[in-house]
Structure formats: C-alpha cells, structure tokens
Image: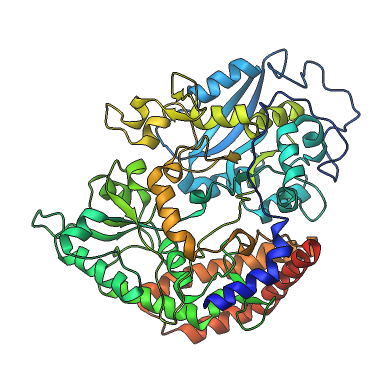
Length: 554
C-alpha cells in the first residue's frame, strides 16, 4: 500500500476513531467508593440505590467481614504453578477475606475445557483469564449464564468505571447488543507503544557470522532464512539450526501482511480491512489476490525447508525446547531473553513487498480480549467479586498484579520507577524472567483481566530491547487513529455471526495452513466454497458495523 493511501485513510477515519482510542491512564488505589449515576448504562446487578449486602465493605479491606469461598475457573500459562499456594492469591485472600477455589487449565486446552463446563452445566461462580470471544460473551449473557455487571460496576468498581468514563471505547467495546456488560477486559495503555508490536526477533550474532545485514524486503528475508538453515551459524558442524521458530502459521502470515498492503486497519478485525479502491468499504482479506500472493510466498519458504516441517501443528513445548537450546534463528514471539534466557536477539525490520508496500499492520486495538472476567448465575457474592476484580484496575492493584511486593519482588527507585529485584532479573537457578516471576505472580503468558501500563509491566514487551524494536517498526506502523477497534454487532447480527462467522473463519484458517503446506492450486474452489458459506452476508454485517462506528464517532 502506498503512503498516499495511508494518508488518505487517516483523513477519513481520524475524527471517527480518535475519540474512541485510549490514552494513558493511571487511577487511584482501588479503595475509593463507587457511586454516581449509570456510568455503565443498561441494567443488571445491584441497583445503585440498594443497600449493600450484609458484611460487604464498599471501600477498603477486607472486602467482606467474614471469610467466603468462591469457585473459580482460569486459564494459566505455567503448567507447574499451583494457584492455591501462589503468593498473589494467598496474600490477596488475607486482605479481602475471599478465598477462590481455583480450577486451572493450560492455555492449549482452555477453550475445550471451558466449553465442556458450560455445556454440562458444571461451571463455577467465576471465570477468570478465560478469554471468551465476544460471541460467547453475548451468547451466555443472553442465556442468563453470565450476570449483567452494569449496576455492579456503577457501584462497586470505581477504578474500572473511571476508565470507562475517560475512554469511551472501553464501554463501547464491552457492551453487548442488549445494552448489558457481561464481562471485564484486558486494556492496554496506548502510550505503552511496544506492547502493540509483534515483529519477530533475529539472532544478531548469526547474521554477523553469515555476513548478512538485517533484511528490508522479502527476497532478503528469504536469503537470510536460507543462510541460517544451511550456513551452520552456531558453528557446531550439525544442521540443527531452525531458521524460523514459531508455533503455527499465523504469526508469520500476520507479520508479512503489511508487505502486501493487507490488514490496513490492524488486526482487531482480523479477516477484514478497508478496500484500497473504495474508501469506507469493507474488503474480505482472505479472498484478495494479494493474500493469495502472500500464501504462495510462504509456501515457497515451506517448500524450500525454511519452516518447521510440521509448522501447522507443532506444539509450543517443542519450539520452546529448541529456543532454550539457542537453536532458533528467528523467534516468532516476544524477546527470547524473557522466555528462553537467550541474549543477543534484535527485532526484524518491517519488510517491503512486491508491490512497494512497506507497512506494519500486525497491530491490535488498546481494548484487548473482553471476556477475561465473568460472573455466572451461580455467583453467591457478585458485589464482593466485582470489588475483588476492580482492585486490579487501579494503580495500587496494577502494581501488585505485575510487580508484587516492595523489597521482596521489586525495588522502588528515587524517581518513583520500579524494577524487579536481582534474583528475578538474573535468577541464580537460571530461570527466565517469566519463570522467576511465575513463582509469585500470574501475568506471564498474557491471559488476565486488567490494565497494562509501561510503568508496571516489566515483561518482554517492556524491556529496553522491545522498546527499541518498536521504534524501529514505528515509522512503518499504523497510527492509533488508523487502527479499528473490534466491531460490535447488532443483536440479530451477533446471532448470525455466532455460526456464520465461526464457520467462515475456521475454514479460512484451515485453508491458510493447507495452502502453505501444499500450494494454492485449489484457490478457486476455496473462494467458491466461501461464497457458498455466505461470504456476501458476512461482509454485509461487517459493513454495517463499520458504518455504525463511523457514524457514532463522526
């Protein structure tokens, strides 16, 4: 995509979306009282003028005067971490008088397990870090399984309520077609620029040994992968180097989309963007000829042995094991120093494509997954649990969630900045940053509700190397007013998309992998199949959602 188009797009959508995009936020300590009238709108939950339940404190700690136990289900990243003994939760239980009886599963099986619980009616009072997609939030809210949180937020969530009032995109994004809010999200501070970037990492030492510069276009990128695969850059005389190390094909395809002018409004709506030939009109990316070209290029990499033989099905543990051994040339993940304890990686540049496009479009909106916290109709203490969650949207709670405890897990500098203690940054047992942090906290892996700020987030995206990486990509990246938020659908559209959208998107993903492994010989049949599945209606629904977004903000 040419820069003239980027400029024109910004003019079209700047006013429409700028008001909806987030800006920096820092809010109180979580002890403030709720109140006011209807900041969340809609209905459900505890009415603002109703008496608080007996034993519930509306401010301060403990939250309840007598201990209570709540059943909770959550996805987690570190398999060997026991949430029942983790200090984050045991300490918070002591302060709140709320004990959560956790059932946890690893992210790889999260979707399957949560769906089984809901289908069997065996679900808990609380879903935490469960990453429900918007369609499921709407469905279970409509069925009465998820409680509406509007009035509970208004009275018992002053931190989250303040975020919604300051940044309307949050309320817009989490309010379902019936006007209710059924879940609480992850929100990223847009001033924390490096958290939005997903550019891969290249082992600089290997580039130097091979006599290569960092690639700036697709041909150089391919040449670099070939040299890593065949040039024995680790010098051990064995062909054990892995040129591209990643789980699945999505990361590679998403990184390269900007080189083909695709996803020109970011990835919050992964399968659609704006038609470059028709301003304000939806384009379905996975049937565009440039998407086909992209898949053919990636197939060429696979055919030449530059990608994992089983890239479409390889497990994270397999890639992680190779990463920890230092065998990965390019890492499709966060900075390897954080996850593999491997130093010396630098961010890959944004690449220029065959038509002159050099854009970085693999960017989401500041509103992350909206389905990270939900209360079910089995919840006996919804008011207390909304207060319990709200703490982590305020400054003190954010610091506790991401940093832990002063002089135990972090130190505070004279200028007010914070950093982890030495045993976490350079663990004596050789643990990576994520592993060392996970002895106390749960944020590694990225599944949680809350507000992510650069001040307190010291994971890979907050490292100086990641900040430098984002600066390298920033000149080619979409600007904040170009990134579309995740669209909301009208209720009848939501019902349609529950089946139509899921079927189309599942088929697209399956065929993406098939085309990468086998080539695009079945492209015409693929397009015809999508048309038969209702692609025209899918695009119409997205067009209506875009029109509403532009209309409501313009």
